[in-house]
Image (cartoon, rainbow, N blue to C red):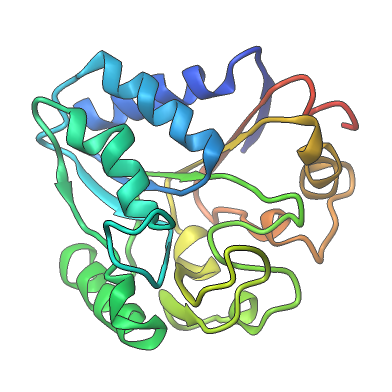
Length: 226
C-alpha cells in the first residue's frame, strides 16, 4: 500500500508517527537531512517515553559522531539527547571507514533482528537527485541484493565523504516506510519517484516494501508536479 499525504507541515505529521511508534516499543530507523531535523525537534518537544524503543539509522557519513556532518550527531542534538526517557540507540560507527562500519552494522542488525530483519518504521528523506539513505542514482550500492549494509566509498552529492548505508533488500522488508519531503526544490524528484509511472532509475522509486506500507508526507511545494 502507498499513500501520499499533502500537509502544511509534514514534519509535524511524521513527528507524531515517530512518537506513536516509540511508545509501542518499535524498531525505528532514523535518517539525516534538514527536513527530518525539524520533525525530530517537534518529537523532542513531546518528550514521550522512548525507553522501550530501539533506534537505528538509515545511513551515516564516515565522520566521528561529534562532527557537524554526522547524521547521528544531528539526531542526538535534535531529539535523542533531549528525551527524558531515551531509546536504545544503535549508531552506525562511520568513523571506522565505509567497509568496516558496514560490516559491524550488518552484524549488529542480524544479531538483534535476525537474518531477515523487519524494521517496524523506517523514516526516509529524499534528495533532489531522488537518492534515499546513501543510495545514489547510478551507483553500484543501489544494485546490492544480498548485503543489508554496504559502504559507499564515493558519495553522489555533498558532503563528498564516504558513507555507510542500509540497502534496498532491508528497506524493502520494513513494515512501514515513511517518506518526509518538503520544498519546491524537491518537486521534480517527487514526481519522478511517486508519479504515474515512477522513474525506474530513481532510487526512491525502488523502495517498495514487499509486505509493508509506504506513507509519503509532502508539503504543497514538493507535491506541485504530482
